[in-house]
Length: 494
Length: 112
Image 1 (cartoon, rainbow over the protein chains, first blue to last red):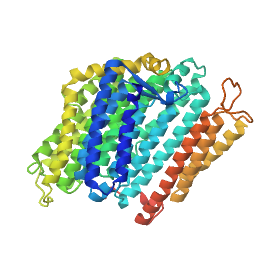
Image 2 (cartoon, each protein chain N blue to C red; image 1 turned 180 degrees about the vertical axis):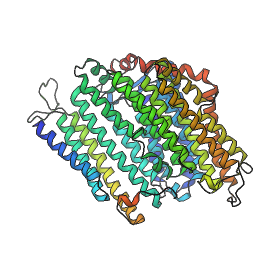
Image 3 (cartoon, each protein chain N blue to C red; image 1 turned 60 degrees about the vertical axis):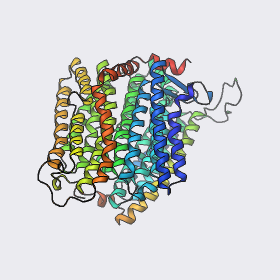
Image 4 (tube, helix red, strand yellow; image 1 turned 90 degrees about the vertical axis):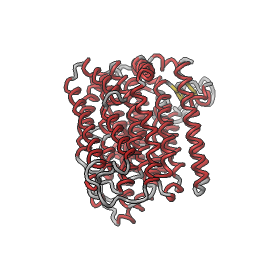
């Protein structure tokens, strides 16, 4: 029974190993990738259903009881994120053949992709801080492989910076784990949560909490540590950008959500107050970045940053509506970011350029793509009744409850500017004068690129319109995060 | 002993950060290597340095060496070894394509 929890890590790993043996047989590896993505999707759905009906599933690896062994914990938050990851993976597998060149695809794209998914899912499911570091490394190693795929001049240059930043933050992570182990004597998250409540030197622990926050802040691209993100996310192929934008930064913010609700909540006055300020700056600076550029890929990439700000805002508020809003926004953002990156990939193919000044009038030839993009912009900005709205509503309610007026204003301005930055692409790119030299013969390719994006967008719209179905689950997740006894009991006392 | 190790680790950290802030690829990579050494040394120190104690092999031992930091370091060494070799190859490819190993010349401009 408990082995159910580890299978989401194993399924992509198997897919990765199999496709490593057949890189040159493209037809076969595509079929295998699609097959495994669908198995993964179905299994993740099944696991989510089991966990939401029967409660948290814990696997103690090799039968070593926690806190001595490594625990894999499938709780409500993890399984939900695993399910969303599987949806994004499935869409990416169907998008990849049209987006990548044959050469890129045959240079182990599927191997790296599934390895990265395995790492992402592992990071969501693990209940052990050091194991979290290991899964971070798994997903980062795979992401290094993906980001250099194709190996152009600019791409290698930006990849090098990306790798260096991540190496630095990983080493900081190991050092922080060393500190935590020395002061508390455990690395199991549930055990940490118990020990920290009993610990006497709260000052040291607050210091460690802030240090650990910096590690995750580099990964999640929080102000002032986001400057590595924009350039390194636009250089790879759109499908890789979509996976990065939808999953990698979200792993960082998930770790913050997990660690600062479960473990480090002994001094909310210091740590969570910092979060609120940083969330505010993250939102504002991210969206200003999105307004500052004419490159369509860069506009969407910059929009990752305010989303992280919104999620961090809810964690900082640390109230029921705040955490509910964060969880809702996290789920929403993973789906819509992938959809928007896919659409922008299609847009760049259709227009033959990523410079907004050279685009125009695409709506006559690609009406479906244009309107999908428009709906996607509305979903991202949080126009009712779409999913961004519900997350933001909960967050704003939470921040008004605690009378964080400045934060509320910043969040509202950011939402407005996000809408402006996205609609600008629609108005300038799809409307306006038709540019003469549109590349010919791309209709079929654009159509193939639009279909997976449309499916993701449909799921995203369902997350908003079907809020009555989604919200009770989000409520369960938030209750579990705020009242930690269920998680701790599941890991330590079974 | 722990204090000496902590000072050594801090010297390594300082040297690593100095090297990371240089402009040449190779110096930066040496910086990351030193950084990982510092972190590993630090992890070892955090498990308390004791000499002559046995590992936990039989039940009921009271005085033993903590195996966890060693397991952590072993994992971490393997990872940083892999990352360093990847970094060297990546830096070499970047150098051959961009014809420069100076970070100042690799800033990039907005109109590419």
